[in-house]
Amino acid sequence: MRERLRVVAAVARDPGLARIELAYFGFNMTEYATWIAILVYGYALGGAATAGVVAMIQLLPAALVAPFAAFAGDRFRRDHVLLAGYLIQAAALGATAAALLAGAPVPLTLVAATVAAMSFTITRPTQAALLPSITHTPADLTAANAVSGLAENVGILVGPFVGGLLLGAWGPGAVFAAFAIVTLVSALLVIGLPIVAGAVPVEQLAARDVLRESFGGFGVLRRERPVLLLVLVLAAGIVVIGALDVLCVAVAIDLIRMGDAWAGFLYSAFGLGGVLGAVGAVALVGRRRLAPSIAGGGLLFGMPLPAISLVPYAATAPVLFAASGGGSSVATVAGHTLLQRIAPEAALARVFGVLEGLGMFALAVGSVGAAVLIETLGISGALVVTGLFVPVVLALAWIPLRALDRDARAPDAEALALLRRLPIFAPLSAPAIERIMAALVRLDVPAGHVLIREGDEGDRFYVIVEGSVAVSQGGRHLVDRVAGDHVGEIALLRDVPRTATVTAITALRLLALDRAPFLEAVTGHPQSRAHAEAVATARLGGDAPGDI
Image 1 (tube, rainbow, N blue to C red):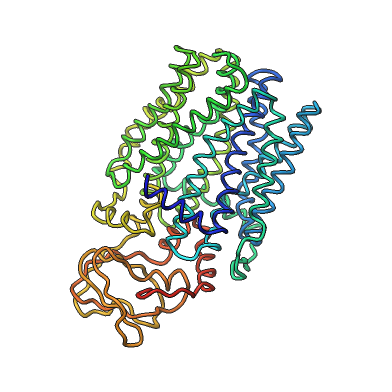
Image 2: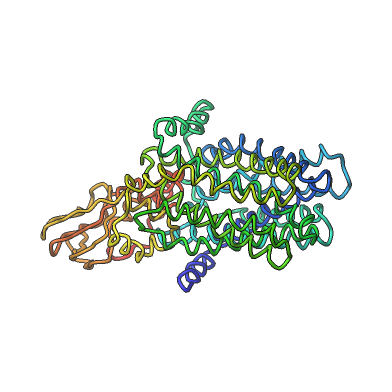
């Protein structure tokens, strides 16, 4: 906890980072609060069936737009794209609020809400690609990524809770109106960010290239059956989350009969469980076998839902939703980590891109499926079927899923402990650390060997496991580095020749990380790898002794 507070404080001291992270917190609150509000609106129109249709109307266009929205940051200045996204969201949310408060025709209201849902797909990829442009060091960048994750988790918790209060007092229109203002504030916060000229992308992508890169990952799944299996298991969990969007509303209004506001409170409880589960999931890093964690998390995800139908009370429902959220978080982290271990390294980004696109469709399937179940089996029956869905999928897939652990690239415990002590990597999530581990190379270097020569091209980042090195510049000794230290990051980030020479004083044991996976790690997103190199070139000030 103390480490997280230090990370947040470091980001807060940088005005540019603080502004972008506050805006992102507002975005996450807005996305989840308004989603619950529009489902409450649909439920009031015609029950669960209409709520499911409302969800599908918004999710399917958003799923189609998402791959192309993510490419906007590769074609235009990312700070401008982020600002435009927030302004579009504020306008669409304001239009939806006006339609709801004025009692406008349903189609008009849904058009405005759907535009808002599509515009939400712009923010996350642009945020990830933009952060390298306003950070000064690797530690700053990883701190910013950590705070982004915290902002997302806390936004999921706070947004639906605040939305629930507004729903109970004034209805869905008030939720959209309030969060339109929040989004407008987010837009104001990101105006005039300190982006250097080198941050502007210069390479324009043809439409056919966008299509190929957006959907090319499906070919990887066709060739790699174990990867396909795991993606389908993860998608099954997303189907249940889509179902819970509708079930939260149905449980609040018609099962425990606490009113519209409790739809937000129950979703907030699920989010709280997710936050706690994500914190606990750090223990999964380095674990050899992850399939049991996926199965255990999946059981905890599903089994509280039937229990809600057995004890349908205001005192128990939030606790059970929170337990379900914790299980979902553990299963997701374990699943993503295992996916990073078994997917081909060269295709990993595309595999996760496919999972992201499938996720939108899975949410739509879950929302519509929950509506059908409620209409045919009632709310209690829908809770039972939804709760059993993931455990049944895991049971059917258990034998091949368990086999994935045998072929996975499990990380080395000693290397893992060393990496987690480095400020550059300490704030990263469990899956991000796992991906770094998969790319590490162990090296043994004799005493007297020149590891890095001043003026050479920077190609690797090194962590010293055993031994010590001398760092010199222009023939002048600068500093010694010992076990637990690292060298080589500045030339990679700033795209400049090596600025000093590093010579082994004693025999060395090293961990080496090539340029590409290193830059992916410190930027937090594969799309920003090349961008980080271009931006770092403009940030040559503030030399510290021993920077290489």
